[in-house]
Amino acid sequence: MNHNELIAEKLAQVLPDLSQTDLLNLLEKPKNAEMGDLAFPAFTLAKIQRKAPQAIAAEIAETIDQTGLEKVVAVGPYVNFFLDKKLISSQVLKEVIQDGSAYGQQDLGHGRNVAIDMSSPNIAKPFSIGHLRSTVIGDALSNIFQKIGYQTVRINHLGDWGKQFGMLIVAYKKWGDEEAVRQHPIDELLKLYVRINAEAEHQPELDQEAREWFRRLEQGDPEATQLWQWFRDESLNEFNRLYQSLGVDFDSYHGEAFYNDKMDEVVELLDQKGLLQESQGALVVNLEKYGIEHPALIKKSDGATLYITRDLAAALYRKRQYDFAKALYVVGQEQSAHFKQLKAVLADMGYDWSQDLEHVSFGLVTKNGKKLSTRKGNVILLEPTISEAISRALTQIDAKNPDLPHKEEVAQAVGVGAIKFYDLKTDRNNGYDFDLEAMVSFEGETGPYVQYAHARIQSILRKANFKPDSTTAYALDDSESWEIIKRIQDFPRIIKRAADQFEPSIIAKFAISLAQAFNKYYAHTRILDDSSERESRLALSYATAVVLKEALALLGVQAPNEM
Ligand code: ARG
Image (cartoon, rainbow, N blue to C red; front, side, top):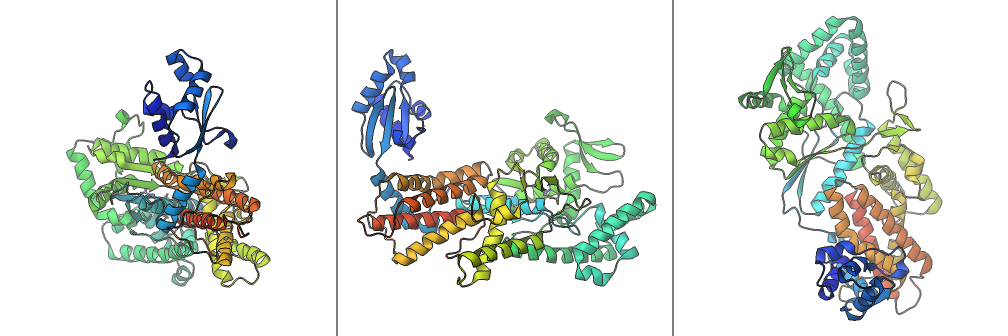
């Protein structure tokens, strides 16, 4: 039970006129911590009871059961509640010490599956910053859902199918150089792709040739398949290097191509249900009754399938394979029309589980305030950017702690963590400006700031040689430690909220606020000084470190013990 519920229950015992839910909704958090932890305004009751609110407040303060509370005082029309800090801190510290990194774990999922479509870059094209967002947000959501008792399936729905592969095959056969592609697959394939698109503007027959090659690919032609496989393998190698440095992995790499032989079924099902209409030789599903103006294009007039056809096949496959409770699609906002169509078509097919599909959208990243554009040269190349983040982290570590062992490893954790954290602390539907300096800074609301708070605590604990003991009654009642205790106690609810809203930023903001509360405590309290409180202060520090580390872990960010 949380504090609000505890107090609402006590109020209900003395106030039969209002339900416990009403009471819960009336409780307020005082603006000022000196006014207590929670306040109950008596105005609503004043109307019901036709009495002055001041008199009612005074009466409540007199009669309410005070167990578990430090005191209850009436101030004008308000009843202010002060929780028993000693009691609560001792309970919270005991729980964290007992549970360790499992603190905050819940069984809300009962082992059901959540399918997470994440990262999903396009073969033969550069891995964009949008794919990076999808990768880190998807990874964090996977950790968060696991923490509340779901099993997750991380699916990399690679963009490895479509007419662009016809374009690539034609371009490669005309101008390609095998060795160059082996050396720099994505660069070379992109060059070929750009060139063929440019030339096709004047030579429409190239376009026709590309269509023809894609058709062959769809029909399993050996030459087309072999080239496609090779482009895919080379690109995936390159992507995997990136995944490795980000520390992210996947349960499935079934991309669009995987559904090639599963598309007929979708078209047949749509047909059987009478949902297909012909429009200029193409097959479409009309979605007007869902308030969607544009019909979903299922099959082109030349018989080629489309992005949405493959997503329909993928959704059916995932439902069968994983029987998911939820299927998340971590994909940029710009595809929201696509996912609305996808859900509507599935709903139209009579699948009530279409409601369990969730487009977890996110906003755009800019650089120097400007939109990214390969054409205009405003690009973020991920591999060099990550290396730069690591080397900046190393510079700062060198300045702060030159003798640190395993410096490179720590710098890797800090540099990569900095990029991830900056992304994840942003409300996902907001964009942000990619500012490496701000990301890697040890000051401000950054990953390194939180990591540093954690490492500082570890160093205090090492100095004191502290061994937490869940049978010791640690307890504190000062106001700075209370700010920490309240946050730690809130952690399980924070995790649930992050899952409900598919919003890792809730965890990131929590981690910042906990690190800030600890730093404030550290500035006011000489933790290691001789005092009867010393062991409790150390236990508080220990519990803070456990929760900071776990919050970072949920975000896919490491917490080094020294930095
Ligand atoms: N490959 C696509 C892109 O880069 C993203 C795929 C997202 N997932 C999906 N099931 N449609 O834009």
